[in-house]
Image 1 (cartoon, rainbow, N blue to C red):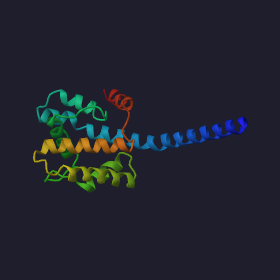
Image 2 (cartoon, rainbow, N blue to C red):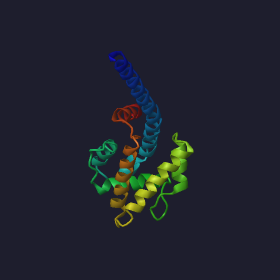
Image 3 (tube, helix red, strand yellow):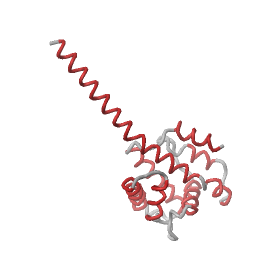
Amino acid sequence: MRHRKMAWNSKWRSAVFICLLLHVYWASPSQEIMKNLTAGFGKALETCKQELNLGDHIIQDFYNYWKEEYDLVNADTGCAIMCMASKLDLITDDRKLHHGNAHEFAKSHGADDDMAKQLVVMIHECEKTHAEVSDDCARTLEIAKCFRTKIHVLKWAPSMETIIEELMTEV
């Protein structure tokens, strides 16, 4: 009986290990793509920081953006995100997500068609959720926080180590 129990435990551990490997396999490409999207989006940060005359606290907010426990509260960060999205032609004149351009932006940074569609849908859902916020910067910040939460639920958020590595290679 003990031998059967040990064999079952061994099979169970093997199954759990295989599931974990599959999770890592499936999560890693999405995390890599989110890292690429973050880096691509962030290229406009310094320009927007200067144009909007924003302080260095903006850099801190972007550095910590993917940390779930980091509290994004500064509306200036929303203004910076809106500026960056505008520079990348990701928003329309009425400050809403340009679905086609956002889809192509995601694909140009490694997302396949399905992932690009899913990202656009998530942002669109966040836009609808926060449509009543009248201040453009505050609404953009709320949309960004909503999007971050959705990405964390999917376990697609890039690790801080990956973000730091990316930032260090650009310096």
